[in-house]
Image 1 (cartoon, protein in one colour):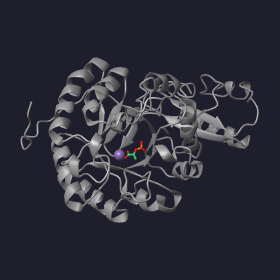
Image 2 (cartoon, protein in one colour):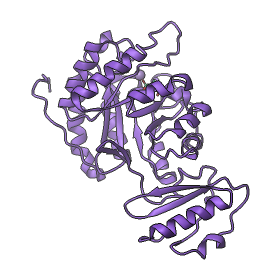
Image 3 (cartoon, helix red, strand yellow):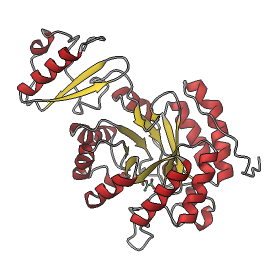
Image 4 (cartoon, helix red, strand yellow):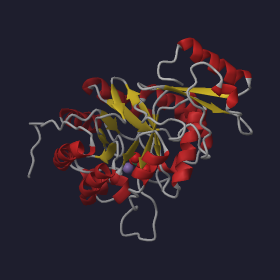
Length: 345
Ligand code: PEP
Ligand code: MN
C-alpha cells in the first residue's frame, strides 16, 4: 500500500480480498503496510487491486513460501516481546541452561544472566531427548520455576513446546515458544502455534534445507501468526568430529529470502563449549540478529548438554567480545559488568 494509506482504503482492500474468497494478511511496519494474500489456486489478476485507491503495487510472489518471503515484505520484521524486540538494532542474546533442573539452579543462573544484561532466558522444561531413558525435563514444575525466575529478574522466557498436547500449557508460561529441531516438520504443531498470537523461535531441523525451514515458517504464518524468528542450530554432515556443522550460510541466505529475523545457536551447532565463542562471533559477523547460548553454573553436573555449555565467566567474556563486534555489523549490545562474577581473563 502507499506510504500514507488511509484506514478506509486499507479496509476496502482487505474486504475485497475476502470477497474473492481469499485470506488477507496485514503486515504493518514503521515504513509501510503490506497486505499478503493467500488461498488462491491460480494467479490473481493484479489489475483487480491496482485500480484501487491506496494500492501502490501488486507483487506476485514467485517462491513456494509466500508470507515469510522477502518478496512479500521488503522491510525487516522486528518481533516484539514485551518492551523488547528481536530483529531490531540491538543484538538479541538468549541464554540459559539446556534444561531447567531445579528451582535453585534456574533462579541462580537467571540472576547471573540478568546482571549481565541478558533479557531472554532459555531453559527446557519438556526435553526432546534422543534416548527415552535420559532426563526428560521437569515439565510443568520446570515452567513454574522459569516463571518465578522471570518475575524476579524481568527477563522473558523462551522454552520448548514439544507437542500439541502441552501447547496451551507451555504457552501460558512462555513469552516465546521454541520449536525444536526435531519438531520443525511437525506441521500440526506449527499450525496450532500459528493460531496463537505469541512469538515463536523456529529451529532448523538438522536435516532440513533452507527451503524446508522457510516452509515450516509459512505453516505458522499461514494461520495468522507472523511473529517468527528463525534459528540456525547446525546440520548433520559427513564429519562427526563435531556434534553438528553450524551452517552460517543460512544467515545471509535467510536475510535474502525472508524478512524475518534469524538467530544462531552455536551451542548445539558445535556441541563443544570451546567452539561457542568463535562461532558466536562468526554468526554476528555473518549478520545474525542474535544468538542463543547455553550457559550453566556447573556444566560438569548438568543434566543435559553440559559439554557445550559455557560457565558464567566464559559467557561474560563472550558478551564483551560481541559488544565490540556488534557495532561493526550495525547492531548494538551493552555488556554489563556483573561485579559478583569472578573472571579469570
Ligand atoms: C535445545 O535448544 O535445548 C534443543 C533441544 O535444541 P535443538 O532442538 O536445536 O536440538
Ligand atoms: Mn540443549
